[in-house]
Length: 190
Image (tube, rainbow, N blue to C red; front, side, top):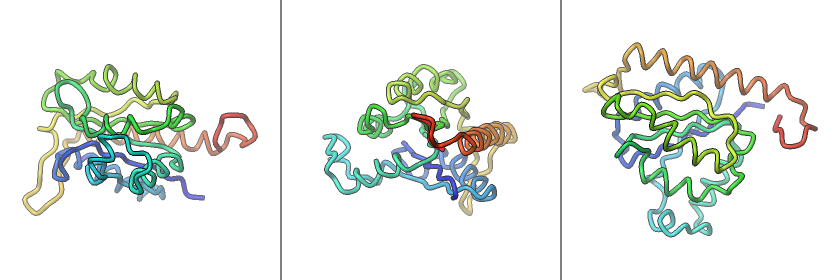
């Protein structure tokens, strides 16, 4: 059975440089025979996000995708030294144990290297509160490392590509390890 990786974008803009690393990762996942589905939080009904309307059809569907994913990538631009408010509205909807037994890979893009630790100080505590116990190293890129191509798409710096490749290798190893763990162990997904 093919393993599913859910990529959750917390960008309020569908043209953000964040999509450079996201598209690169999607392409590499496909090359590795993994399913990488992209969820744009900004396309969910804003009123349902802000009011935490768990009964909303699109919200229920998005949360089902989180539940069924074998691993999750949280991608966000960095604003005010933290992840986006768009991502926060969705994280607030994930059940308290919603990330248990799932490897999680953070990908952040910021305007300056000064926010390098934003993954560690802003996102990881929230992921831990949602029972994520296997948070992979993550990738932080400065937006100048991601060039928009006039014809569409992005060119990533060699350093950004290298960090994404290391994170992808780490994710693949974790997925392979989880696949080999016997299903009868309590709390462990095979």
